[in-house]
Image 1 (tube, one colour):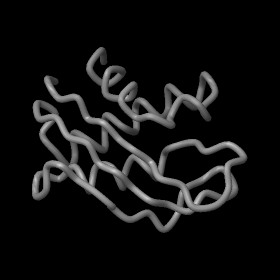
Image 2 (tube, helix red, strand yellow):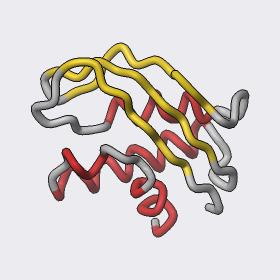
Image 3 (cartoon, one colour):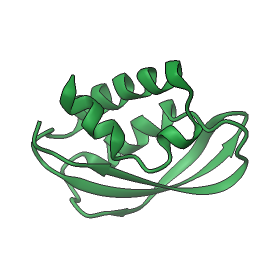
Image 4 (cartoon, one colour):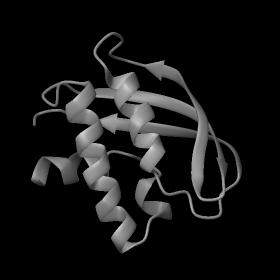
Length: 102
């Protein structure tokens, strides 16, 4: 659980828009997405570009991935589905940092 919270802390926008309950839900979703798609021992940085509307992100695409072929792109896209966006609208860039070590 400690590593999941560490991983969740790596997402730059996550907690600036999340409330207490949604932050816990987000941390759980991030842990599941990472475990399902990539190796938690590896570190990576992925930049997404998404459309924000209605508190959700849609139409996300990967702009940059410093660990191609290791599943972090899929993990980041999965995490984007759970990322709370509040009232933010328009095209947003979402940096995600997976610190590894878990």
